[in-house]
Image (cartoon, rainbow over all chains, first blue to last red; front, side, top):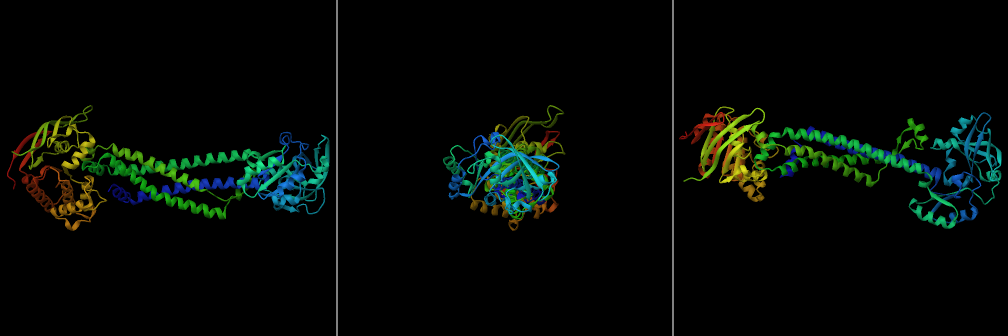
Length: 405
Length: 232
C-alpha cells in the first residue's frame, strides 16, 4: 500500500513532479553530454597523436632522446625493418633520421626538428601526404625538397619553391648546412608541431649527417590493434636489443596528464550538476512534505509509524528518479549517438584547439561504464536528496498537526 | 458493572512551560466506561481537543496518567503507542480525515492493511463497513469526489475498521450541513448501541450534545460539570 500511496502522491501535484523529473532528465543528459564531449575531445586527441604523429611504438637509441643528438642511432635498420614488416600484428613501419637545427629564410631563422623520411612509408604511417595543402608530397624526385608546416611558412615569410637553408651538427659535431627548396606546405591538426617539424628525404639527410645507410634514429610502429601493444613491445625488445622501446603514453606523458585533468574536470562538472540537482529535489520534496503536514499527522494518528512515513517519502523521490533516469539516459544516449556521427563543429575555436593538438570537429563518445557511473551517481543523488525531506517528516509531532485539523 | 475503558487521572497539559506557559488542561480526572456516548463541550480554547489528544495518545500529558482499557498509554514508547492506537482507538477529525489519493475503499482498507489482514478479509470488512455507513455505492470514489458528509462517513467507517474499543471524534460535524450531521450522528448512535463502541467527541453542535448520554463541560482546562442526560 505504501508503494501505491507514494506513487499516487507524486501525481497529486503534477507540475511539481514534472519539474523534478525534468531536472533529473536535464541533469543526467548534461552529465552524459559533458562526459561524452570531453571523452570525444581527448579520444580525438589520442587518435590524432597516435595515428598522425607518434605511432603506437617508437624505438630509439637509449641516449638519443636525452641528448637530442643524431649520432645516437639504431644499426642494421634494414634487417630490423624487414622483421617488423613481416609481423602480422603491425600495420606499418617507418624509419626516421632526426636532426635538430635551424631553418633560415632570407629574412628570418627559426629552430626546427628536421625529420628525414622515406616518403612512401610515411603515407601509411602518419598519412603525411594528406596534410599537404600546397605543392606536392615529394613528387618532384629532387633530393633537396623540403615539406614545411603552414605556420612556419608564414613565420619564415617564404612560399612554395622558395629556398631555405637548414643548419645542424653532424655526427662528428661539425656544423653543416644544406640548401632546400620548399616542395610542399602541410597543415596538421597540431599547429605547434607544424611550426617546428620539417620533413626532408632521408637519404639526403643521412649524407649531410654522415650516417651509414643502415643507421637511423627512430623506428615507428603502427599496430593493427592497440590491444597488442604490450606483446609487440616485448617482441620488439628481442629484435632491437639495445633500443629504448616506448609506447605512445610514454612518448607523450602530457597526453596522459591531459586525459587525467579532463577526467577530473568532467567529474567536477558532473558533481556540480548533481549537487544542483540535489538541492532542487530537496527543495521540491521538502515543499511536498510541508504541504502535507496535516495529512502526515493524520496518517500517524491512524497508525502509520514513522519508519513507514520515512519509507513513503523516500519512495516518492525514488519514483521520480526512476521515471527521470531512463528518459535522461535515453536523451543522453541519443545525443551522443547522433553527435557522435555528425560531430560538433568547433571551428570558431579551431586555432585555440589546434594549439593543444585538438581537432576542431569533436565527436562525442561514451563507453558503457560511464553510463553506469552516471546512473549510480544519479540514484545516489536521489537517495541523498530524499533523506532530508523524509527526516523532516519524521520530526513531525502528530499532535501538533492534529491540533491544526 | 461496566468495564472502565478510559481512565485519565489528574491529567494536565501546559504548552510553552519555559516561556509563556499556557495551561490547556489542568488536573482533569475522567473516568469513562465501555459503551458510553459522551460529548465533551466547552468554549473554544477550553482544552477539549487537547484532552481528546491526550486520551488518544497523540499528545503527552505534562502531568498525570492515562489508562485505556487498563493499559497506561502515557508510559508507552512512540512506536508502541502508534501500534496501540492502530488496534484500539479510532479517530474522526473535523477535516483532513482521508488520504486524498486513495478511494473510499482503499482509505478504509489502509488501516486493515496496517493490521496485516489478508486481501480477502479486507475486501469483506471494507464492504460491510461501507454498507454500515450507507456508502456502498461510493466504493471507488476518491475523497475529492465525495461531499463533506460522505467523507466524514468514510472516516467513521475507517475509524471502525480496526474494531477499536474507542472512537475519538474532534468536532466531527463542524463542517457538515444539517442533514449530513444528523445522518452521521445516527450512524454513530447506531454503532454505539449495536457494537458497544465507546464514543467520545468534542463538539459545539447542539444536535450532537442532545444525542449524548453524558456531557462533560470544560472551561479554561478544568471540568466544570459532568452530567448524564437522556438523549433526544
